[in-house]
Image 1 (tube, each protein chain N blue to C red):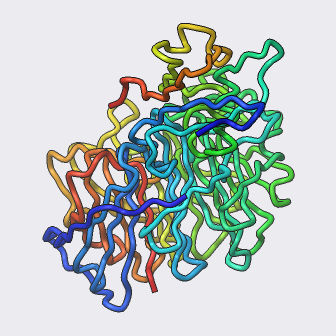
Image 2: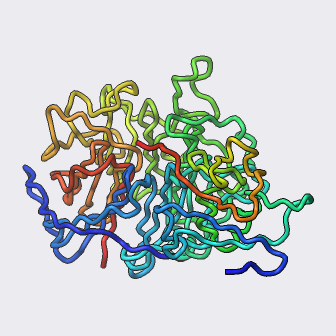
Length: 388
Length: 106
């Protein structure tokens, strides 16, 4: 079943205060999932000009998108949910010109699971040498795997049958599996993160799983602040150069692991800013990662009205604030867990969307930023990739 | 169109927002083979038949556990099935099943 795209408008990117590095040989695509549908931004001339398209699927909440660059042209996936009509997975093989929804639902819980799909939270391409493998993280918290390019997904039973699962409780966004990280050297090793159950690891391709949250303090459990599971992990990112190093944004704290998620140590370089949703690792540079802290779990806006991206270049030992071009003061923005991303290029393109409907971007590793789009519906997810 | 022998044909009214799933049609006809032990055709029978011919439309109405989605209303003739017997509500010959989104949103 196919449907077509929608209207197109051309935007000249709003002038920012900084100088933007031109990457004229590469066009970049951004998929921007909002509460009212999918938008895309196509960057031409190395990011000098952005073209906005959308909305597709108006009225549907788009929590998950994926630009799978293992095929050419890239295959796009969109997981959306309509308040009335439920969740849908669609894919496009022509960069969003048309979308296919399989007549037989690609992603549903199997008979006997006593569960129904509520939302698709994450769509992650599999290993480079397994181009038809795609993972999906969903609500209620479960992992699905496709081996046919996303046409059909199977429930990963090993995680679904984990004895902890009946005790998992939802965070504010729902009981969602929102993070799927592959290990670049071993396709059998996966990390998933669930709100609010925490990190789970497998070393055998998903047959068996273990909770791995040692060191992550869950202050909302007054009698046991370091439980085996139950942590409200918001997002995890894997270091570009050292696959055993991970960066983690918790509900109250930022952490690093140097042993593949086996244990976690707090990162203390951003004083007083322990809340936030996203964390992004630099796509090519080991030791470099980005956070976008928010002020307290009660307010959840950029601290002191100043929108600031923080960057570490030493594996989380220290952090520097990046503000060039970002709005401040009087900028009370919220950025959700999947609304901050990188385009995988060098220097890194970094992009984030806000609940107030803005998309900000940098094409120089975060040194300078500019407004790429505004007046959109609240942004739930952003993904970006080069189109070669 | 006449229903095949041994089947009951029920018109299903499709809301605007879902018509692209059925080729733009306002109403689709579904053929129900058989019925329950009493010879009654129910809403569940109609939706089961809809799932065969228009799977994408049917899953907008029910989830994979067979539950009607909470913001979807189904009417048999003028009556909301939530006020009757739910999915077990009979559909009499000549009656239309209407799929209507609830007045909800944000």
